[in-house]
Image (cartoon, rainbow, N blue to C red):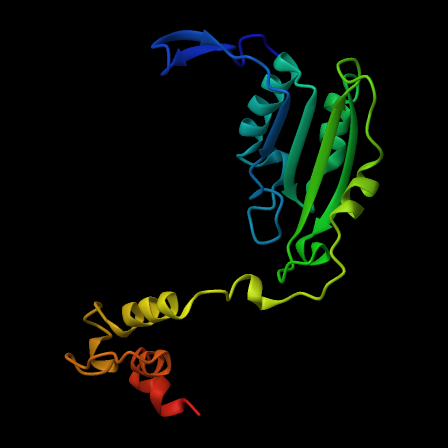
Amino acid sequence: MSKKAVRKFMHCKVHNKRCEMKPSKVHIAGLPCVDWTPNGLGKKENGPTAVLMAAWVALRLILQEPFIINENAKTFDRNILDSIFSAYYVVESMVVDAAERGLPQSRERRWTVMVHRSLVLQRASSLDNVVRLFAMPEACSWQVFLAASDDEKLHELKWAARETNPKRASSRWPTGVKVGLDVDDAFVQSLSQWELDNWK
């Protein structure tokens, strides 16, 4: 890799001059995943985001932070990071689903943790063991998301009751209908005519 591919110096807004980048203790990044997702480009390492990944890799090799954590789509090829960083880092990778951690959302993501071989004296236990610490045996609950107060729900329903798009204005309740103080009443008034006709 050319030494001119990336630079350690750039303009700093804090000091208003060129400053040198300093390594942090932990670097956490989510690389672009559009080339690795089934619904994305699917071009993998040959996609347009490969240039961004190459720049990220070059900076990591220059700065060599003690810990690097990378997140990407579950189909991301872990062997790429392993082949690039294994001379300097112990590389561990696994797919984690948010639902397994107790969240009501199925989102599998690949997490790769890299620990520097010479900068970190004692490496933690395997990534499998670390992930188990965060496991939540409780069943998923929508209350994680649906936790708004009555005032917050009323505010959202009042917003939904207004129709500003002229193409759909006729499908809403007539202008001037006032939303009452009751949340259920506000919900009804936020529905379109079609929704009202088909609401049971």
